[in-house]
Length: 152
Image (cartoon, rainbow, N blue to C red; front, side):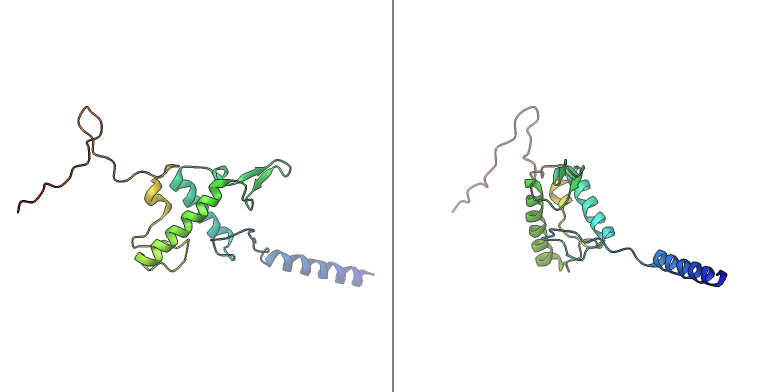
């Protein structure tokens, strides 16, 4: 009796300890259209933190809250800002591939120039109009100037 109890207890301890050292199942994100399908939690956090900082917004700017589940529904496409964000991501991908030899790594820290959300948004929800119109001292914006006509 003691031997069987000891054997069962040892077996249970071995199973419990082996489960403690196995990696938890990786998060599988749903409805990814632009980001890589195999992105892990740490990488996703880096990307999402970049978005929130670059636009000065919180998660609910692009994602919807599910009242039934009492949680954010990150997979939902119900918020139009999420669809716009996807289009902007595609645009920056094209620009970076064409002009900066971007290799498709959304999370790598680059030591060369590239276009990001911050490039146009600068921490604001709406992108800045750049360059700003010149201002006249004490008056409205100066009209656009045309170069003087050349004499023949």
